[in-house]
Length: 289
Image (cartoon, rainbow, N blue to C red):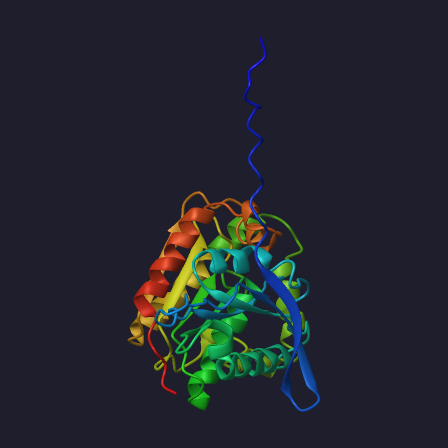
């Protein structure tokens, strides 16, 4: 006898993140492509305004030689899932300083439009993975030196910070290989020798780290970028800056997994989002108008 009840349909796959591509004007005659993840919260009729979201300006990875907004989708989706409104930047793959100047221009644009994007009083953050982590740190230094805009925090995931490419964690990851994509990336990014002395190009070598926002550093235990990221965290702490660091013991294939399309490819995704939520909660504040 057949059952009067139909079989339950299979569960639907998770919905893709809400995102939209746009081209923004950051200066007269200058446009930058961005991908915006999330939407401004809406208050219910007759209630107080909804709380603002953290507004994150995000930079994808790619060792300075590749990568695009699609490769930034994993980290941007994790940031959105942790409660943020994310503006991911299609920065030019060009030698320093053009990527930094583009990133800073987008940061200024995001701060100017923060109420429309994420709600009144939205705190503004910087974030990036691998080469994008270097750009996030460099743009953070630029914002400090310009005294604008105020940054609530910076999030560096496996940041690519050391142009010498000689830390034990990098050597362990590359083994006996004669080619190294990070070395080639630094060669392209640093157009001349003097660029390696500039703190915006190599934040890890900056002589002055005071005045930077709280920093969250996330790395994997077998991450090639682990040693340089933790060394930068230690320098920030020595300069009196608040730093939170976390090492993921099961984060296989970092930072490559961070550059895959879709957060499902990222090991430790729930653990990453937990760290992001805690950081937002600890650092969000109403920036000065």
